[in-house]
Image 1 (cartoon, helix red, strand yellow):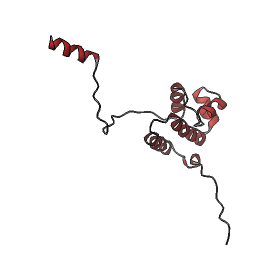
Image 2 (cartoon, helix red, strand yellow; image 1 turned 90 degrees about the vertical axis):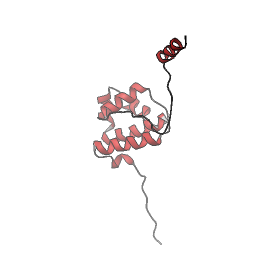
Image 3 (cartoon, one colour; image 1 turned 60 degrees about the vertical axis):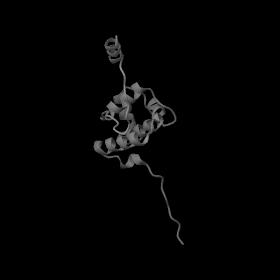
Image 4 (cartoon, one colour; image 1 turned 90 degrees about the horizontal axis):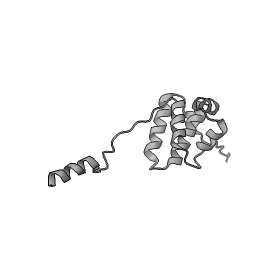
Length: 118
Protein backbone atom coordinates (compact mmCIF):
# COMPACT_ATOMS: atom_id res chain seq x y z
CA UNK A 1 0.00 0.00 0.00
CA UNK A 2 1.40 3.41 -0.96
CA UNK A 3 1.62 6.26 1.50
CA UNK A 4 -0.77 9.15 1.11
CA UNK A 5 1.06 12.44 1.11
CA UNK A 6 -0.76 15.38 2.62
CA UNK A 7 0.03 19.04 2.76
CA UNK A 8 -1.11 21.65 5.21
CA UNK A 9 -4.18 23.56 4.00
CA UNK A 10 -3.66 27.31 3.73
CA UNK A 11 -6.80 29.30 3.01
CA UNK A 12 -4.67 32.25 1.87
CA UNK A 13 -3.75 30.27 -1.25
CA UNK A 14 -7.43 30.21 -2.23
CA UNK A 15 -8.27 33.88 -1.69
CA UNK A 16 -7.51 35.30 -5.10
CA UNK A 17 -10.09 38.03 -5.71
CA UNK A 18 -11.53 40.85 -3.57
CA UNK A 19 -14.91 39.10 -3.78
CA UNK A 20 -13.46 35.84 -2.40
CA UNK A 21 -11.73 37.78 0.38
CA UNK A 22 -14.94 39.60 1.29
CA UNK A 23 -16.95 36.35 1.28
CA UNK A 24 -14.36 34.67 3.52
CA UNK A 25 -14.42 37.56 5.99
CA UNK A 26 -18.24 37.59 5.99
CA UNK A 27 -18.32 33.85 6.73
CA UNK A 28 -15.80 34.28 9.55
CA UNK A 29 -17.80 37.15 11.04
CA UNK A 30 -20.87 34.90 11.11
CA UNK A 31 -18.96 32.04 12.74
CA UNK A 32 -16.89 34.09 15.21
CA UNK A 33 -19.54 34.27 17.94
CA UNK A 34 -17.88 37.34 19.44
CA UNK A 35 -14.32 36.01 19.24
CA UNK A 36 -12.24 39.02 18.15
CA UNK A 37 -9.05 36.95 17.87
CA UNK A 38 -10.83 34.69 15.36
CA UNK A 39 -11.67 37.72 13.22
CA UNK A 40 -8.10 38.99 13.53
CA UNK A 41 -6.85 35.60 12.29
CA UNK A 42 -9.24 35.76 9.32
CA UNK A 43 -7.93 39.22 8.46
CA UNK A 44 -4.42 37.78 8.75
CA UNK A 45 -5.31 35.07 6.24
CA UNK A 46 -6.59 37.70 3.82
CA UNK A 47 -3.53 39.91 4.40
CA UNK A 48 -1.22 36.99 3.63
CA UNK A 49 -3.16 36.33 0.43
CA UNK A 50 -2.77 39.94 -0.64
CA UNK A 51 0.81 40.27 0.61
CA UNK A 52 1.58 41.12 4.20
CA UNK A 53 4.25 43.72 3.38
CA UNK A 54 1.90 45.58 1.03
CA UNK A 55 -0.98 45.51 3.53
CA UNK A 56 1.30 46.70 6.34
CA UNK A 57 2.51 49.61 4.20
CA UNK A 58 -1.03 50.62 3.19
CA UNK A 59 -2.25 50.33 6.80
CA UNK A 60 0.66 52.41 8.10
CA UNK A 61 1.95 49.59 10.32
CA UNK A 62 5.17 47.63 10.47
CA UNK A 63 5.05 44.16 8.98
CA UNK A 64 6.07 42.64 12.31
CA UNK A 65 3.33 44.40 14.28
CA UNK A 66 0.80 43.40 11.63
CA UNK A 67 1.80 39.73 11.94
CA UNK A 68 1.42 39.96 15.74
CA UNK A 69 -1.92 41.78 15.56
CA UNK A 70 -3.39 39.29 13.09
CA UNK A 71 -1.94 36.10 14.52
CA UNK A 72 -5.16 35.08 16.26
CA UNK A 73 -3.34 34.85 19.58
CA UNK A 74 -4.70 38.17 20.80
CA UNK A 75 -7.39 40.71 20.01
CA UNK A 76 -5.98 43.75 18.25
CA UNK A 77 -7.24 47.28 18.86
CA UNK A 78 -10.23 48.29 16.79
CA UNK A 79 -8.27 51.09 15.11
CA UNK A 80 -5.83 48.44 13.86
CA UNK A 81 -8.73 46.39 12.50
CA UNK A 82 -10.11 49.43 10.68
CA UNK A 83 -6.70 50.25 9.18
CA UNK A 84 -6.26 46.67 7.97
CA UNK A 85 -9.77 46.41 6.55
CA UNK A 86 -9.17 49.64 4.63
CA UNK A 87 -5.78 48.46 3.39
CA UNK A 88 -7.37 45.22 2.19
CA UNK A 89 -9.91 47.19 0.16
CA UNK A 90 -12.80 45.81 2.19
CA UNK A 91 -15.68 47.51 3.98
CA UNK A 92 -17.39 46.61 7.22
CA UNK A 93 -21.14 46.93 7.36
CA UNK A 94 -23.85 46.30 9.90
CA UNK A 95 -27.36 44.96 9.71
CA UNK A 96 -30.06 44.30 12.26
CA UNK A 97 -30.03 40.84 13.77
CA UNK A 98 -33.59 39.76 13.10
CA UNK A 99 -33.09 36.65 15.21
CA UNK A 100 -32.72 38.68 18.38
CA UNK A 101 -35.56 40.75 19.71
CA UNK A 102 -34.23 43.59 21.81
CA UNK A 103 -36.02 46.55 23.24
CA UNK A 104 -33.87 49.61 23.57
CA UNK A 105 -35.07 52.37 25.85
CA UNK A 106 -33.53 55.76 25.37
CA UNK A 107 -33.29 58.53 27.91
CA UNK A 108 -35.44 60.84 25.82
CA UNK A 109 -38.26 58.29 25.57
CA UNK A 110 -38.02 57.70 29.31
CA UNK A 111 -38.33 61.41 30.00
CA UNK A 112 -41.33 61.68 27.68
CA UNK A 113 -43.04 58.83 29.53
CA UNK A 114 -42.42 60.57 32.87
CA UNK A 115 -43.90 63.79 31.50
CA UNK A 116 -46.97 61.97 30.25
CA UNK A 117 -47.46 60.30 33.65
CA UNK A 118 -47.23 63.61 35.52
